[in-house]
Length: 220
Image (cartoon, rainbow, N blue to C red; front, side, top):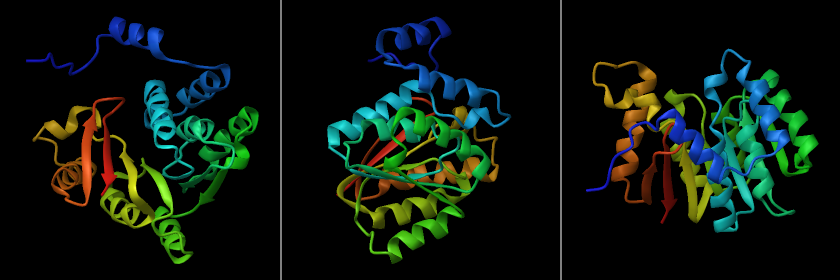
């Protein structure tokens, strides 16, 4: 039976990054600036950003939707992986956080690929559907308020083309999903969606233990 890595030891994690992470100064500085914020725990890990960029390249994705942008690190990783004619619609409700990302997007030369939409995420998704963007996206990344995950997942299935990929962040939620003593609303929402994706015949799925857990769902 294969060994199970519940948590990488710090020295092994550093080794994994050392032999795999292709980093640059712009990304490092964005991570450092984000790390100084009280909400820094919302930031995805660098290896997750690189993995997501790899998926975009493998799929040949051109149209990406991001639900939850924060300071724009995931946006930057994905935008750099897109071809010149690719585009990301990035949805977030916080102008202060996303203003940080805007600076680094411009520095990296990818700002023209990013259509940032500030406001309630559900409303932003509804406007996309009303604007004729049903089945228009190749890849969708969900990393917003956890109580909204089920709604975002359902609307994402409408916005995603057949064969497209949904990526749901925080599927392992720091291990809290496996602790039955924790029954807060966020944890319960993630557990509910995890089970829903597992049983959803509309998708093919796999939960990848990268970062805080990334649930991949490919639309049939």
